[in-house]
Image 1 (cartoon, rainbow, N blue to C red):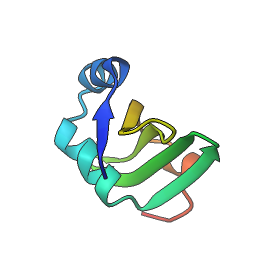
Image 2 (image 1 turned 60 degrees about the vertical axis):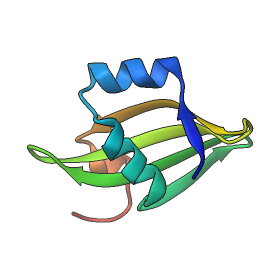
Image 3 (image 1 turned 90 degrees about the horizontal axis):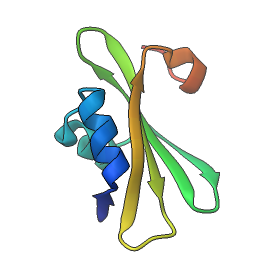
Image 4 (image 1 turned 180 degrees about the horizontal axis):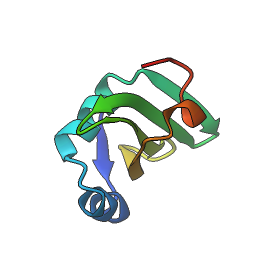
Length: 85
């Protein structure tokens, strides 16, 4: 998928210690895509670091190329993800 990182997404990935390569991997091979609204899609996958996390990538699909708006990881997998670990 052709997409770029917003300044905010780059900052948040740095603050949250999420490597760009991991974000790109989730965007290319998400376990789930949530069609949030007309211009916002959420790509997410379970990742394993020191423990399992759900990595969520928010993408503006009304821009060309698509823009990664923000990204975060959460340990509250069941809250946002249907599959089991």
